[in-house]
Amino acid sequence: QVQLVESGGGLVQPGGSLRLSCAASLNIFTFNVMSWYRQAPGKQRELVATVTSGGDTNYADSVKGRFTISTDNAKNTVYLQMNSLKPEDTAVYYCNVRSRYTARDYWGQGTQVTVSS
Image (tube, helix red, strand yellow):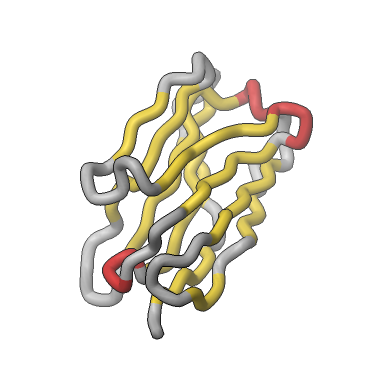
C-alpha cells in the first residue's frame, strides 16, 4: 500500500509563495506519473501539474509560469513550488501518483492553501 504525506499548505497573501511537499512511502521510481490536483469549494477537482518519470512536465494554463513541479528522488518526494499566488489558487491540493506496474492511482490526504489578504 502506498502512503503519500503532504505538507506545506497554509495561509499566504496574494503575490506570495508556498512550496507543497508530497513524501511517498515507496521508491519514487515505482511511479511513472506524479501529479498535483486541487479542488476549490463547490468546484470539481482539477489537474494542476504533472511530471513523468522521464522528467516531462505539464501545467494547467492557469498556473503556467507561476508553479513548478519537481521531484527529489533521494527523498521520494514530489514538490509543487507556487509563486505569485492569487486568491483563485485557494483550494485543497492533492498529490497523486500512478504505479508503473499496476496503473493504479494513489492520493494524498490533501493540504489546504488559502490565498487572502
